Length: 52
Image (spheres, rainbow, N blue to C red):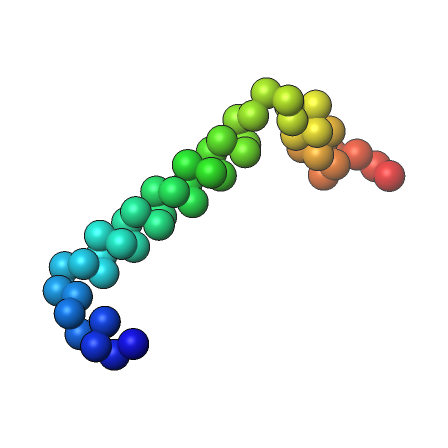
């Protein structure tokens, strides 16, 4: 394992981190703006305003 990591250049880690971040960010945006979940999002968004 250490031999594998030792062959990476120092610039490889930020690029890998950026790719992982972009994948996760895209997945979260897709989940938030998915049209089929609009009713659930509206219902959950009004929870803090309800008196129950």
